[in-house]
Length: 236
Image (cartoon, rainbow, N blue to C red):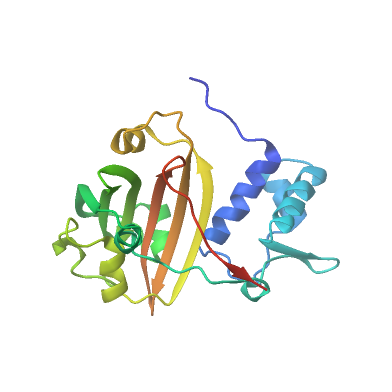
């Protein structure tokens, strides 16, 4: 099957969004100049300009004539997003939450994962893959990597009795979080675990949490679009 290639302006957007969501570029930090992005991607100024305009419209960056493009300051929009335990969320609906554990173990972090966790490449990390169910129906596929320095007893936890989120909220209290949510199609493994077709639209949340001096975890959580919806609140 031929691999789909993103349009050039979407490649630039994905590049910038990736650095922001992983925490590589902090609020207020400069984004590479139009000239630098033109040279990096081998594209025209018009194409780069379109990508940056769309990112600005999404509120991810700010553009000021004469001073370039910067990552948007967090104080521009205050979000009351709460990191909630899925078990509590399901229980509040009067339903039964259960967990299917697919994998729990330790492994060496690749370069990209190590950067996200603030560790050196090859460092030991904890890895869990779970499926969360509501009344026996899969509603979330959770693939999470955890920094052992933040939660040293993570591997000893029985995740059929408590969730990774609850364990981390207790043992690695949250001081900062970054997240992004996007529509996607599930991977083959995700579709199989969730009991859905590869063509089923899903919502995927990528989340990076910090506890004090350590990045505690990075997680990809995939939800079938027909079974789950996100709710939140924003205030100016």
